[in-house]
Image (cartoon, rainbow, N blue to C red; front, side):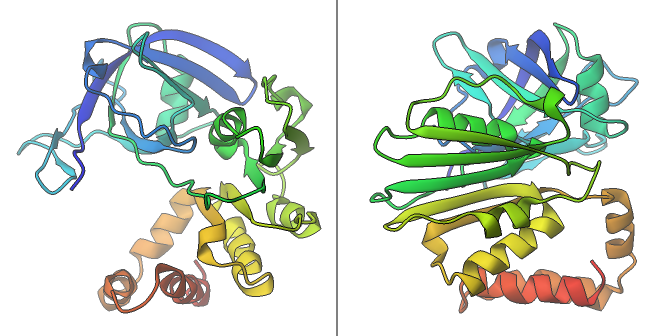
Amino acid sequence: MSVNLVHRIVAQRVERLSPGMVRIVFGGDGLQGFVSTGVGDEYFRVFFPEDDQTEPNLPYPTDDGYWAFPDGVEPAPMRTYTVRDWDAAANELTVDFVVHDGGVAARWALRAQPGDVVGVNTPKGLYAPPDDIRWQLLIADATGLPAAARLAETAPADVRTRVVVEVASAEDELAIALPASVELHWVHGGNGHAPTRIEEILRASELPDGPGYVWVAGETKATRGVRKHLRHDLRLPATEYKVIGYWTENAEAWRERYEALDEDTQSRLMAMWDDDTRSAEDIEDDYEAELEKLGL
């Protein structure tokens, strides 16, 4: 079982990249022992302080690869983010935060200054293309932009890479230095300001011949349609795509509806993932179908 450490990290530099994104570079002694997977979309949990705290209540790692909080300690608010960059030589970790009105993470990032403290755990990557790919298509909204940019920056020279990113407006486009083999396109809309076009972008994309890989990250309900198209319409094997829901529109309302489900229904939904006789893709098909029946 992999080790899952918890690191206390300190903001070193804060930069407003665009109206919708803030970059924070972290350092500090707490990054000693930080282990990056090196995978471009690696993600971790970020533990934030409460509004009346200067530091978050951090958990301790447990033997089962997770973490726990000491008895009597209020768990820190926690959100999931991707690693924009890890510089081991400089001992610096970069995270790009999508910012908006409301939300624990966005509120913290908008006020962040050098010296502010958060915690992170050991990251894990999801991007896992076959070794023989000749092309890849990366599609993301603003929440997936940091991961898509890092994946594009590290794309092999012999892999034709097309990146399409949906941001709210032209002001949210970022200057990204990319290899010659990478083609970058910006689309405006979505991101809570208008209906997302991520599924439309995928359906309009002509996939090249030969072995390839499709990676898509965005709003959870939108990515359900993306996954269905890749799996059931295009009939791609699960090894040739990765679809990740990074956020849920109107998340508080969604959570309230989920928590209002009766206990048997919640238990049934969770138990679906315990069936080790079926593939994860088959389980996800049924799980998403159940959520849709429940209006979720």
